[in-house]
Image (cartoon, rainbow over all chains, first blue to last red; front, side):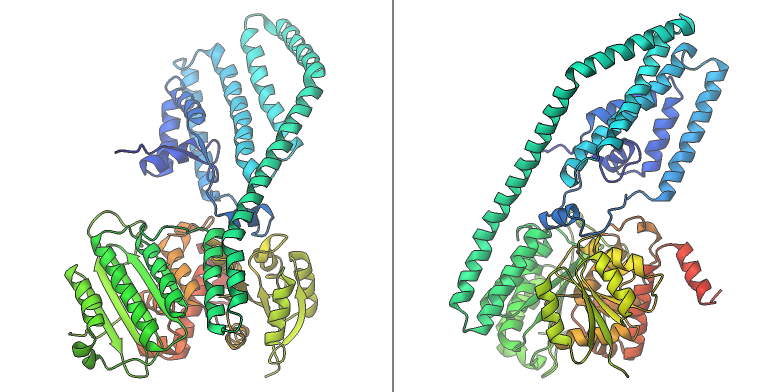
Length: 424
Length: 213
């Protein structure tokens, strides 16, 4: 089954309408080429501008997806100003491109081969007006989720945009009639708008006010319901368990830690299922080991990759290493570090515990040989175990990635730390 | 060495009390603040050596505090202290000028050690922060405005970051790479500097200020 990949206009990375950025994202080309294409095609009867406006209407605006905790922190202003992601270089570049584009357009105009002279002026003004109004409405759609729309700066900009469009219309209609007709038509329009405004204005204002109040209230109550449900499900349960286990300090610590992990995942995103990716699988295993053995397992990850049979074997071996460390090392903390760089996935499981003599394990510790070293080797990877009595243990697992693309590949090659291989 | 003077900035009173109880004595807690404005006022007045700074706070977050104070009080060092796990916020506050990041479940002695390090001008990198930093330099985390300007880490710096992310303490990193602890600290500080100087322009200014050019 194929799902269609949709193109969006990213709300947080746009200069005008976000069309060029959206198209560039969709086709995976640098945005500058897309802008260039729009500008060059505008030289031919304004095709570029028309295409831009059509795409602006058709492509939906995409809001940045944020975890509830971050969204709330942003809304309450706890995170600092969210700057636009478009840098000054990009703005300058686009402005320069635009200036060249307009220059060439005017040149074509002056040779008489361009758009009909009578249409050119009004069209230009009209397009700018439409862009101003649409941009404002985009902001409303976006901001509804972030903060309330600013009142009258917004209104005046919409008015300015509508004004521009009206001027263009008047100019176009009265092209033949000269200035007298233009003034007549303009005053007729102004009077009509004023009249309609007087009659309908208060009613429209109240209606929109009611609507936005109601919308705000609905959003708020949905949020409250979400939070309440979540708190009931997890936090209350944990609190009850904490009261029951108040005497057992390690149980209390484990419960608190599990609750912290859950809340954190809920508030700050990454609520992936363990079946999704290597990092999700590792985090799932870490949570299970924590619960079963009451040892905190800290998972740090750089990059990620989807699970295939090889990566699954890697995750299982890593889990086994965590279990071993939790069972035998006698530590109060296990560090797990996963890195996906290029086409290699690496996982390190480290403890500062009692350690063991690696020559001995070859015979009597089937767990290490069978479920860690051999399992990784069967899938084409390597497993390196370093340990010395009293000096802690580190299990280093490496696995080449064969199928698919890593979710996010790091650009520089991974450095390898010299380790001696254990021959089981 | 005289006792270090510390200001605690956090919007949760319970947490401020807890931290104060844990560290007051070995260090001197000279002030507390609960939002950006009061933090700026308290820090400007108390002139502490180290500020323990929450990442998320009313009035624009810890970022805003650093932004307002960094030029006027360049000697004040900031240590970010947070429960927030949002990588871009953590990297953001480091880029603004904080010299380290620790999570709120850190133990008292560890926190004191971190405060000492930051006061001495070193950087405090927890495994989590090292992971975020590697991510940032790999371009996985989007950082506002800078992405392509970020200087590459040297191979050695990457090795140090990876070992810290793997849970190695500075001492263990030094042993692993056969270098001195001082050298590890130098590498970590240089990673911090690369993060904080985003563009060529800033780098030039930085070098100019120190008469390196």
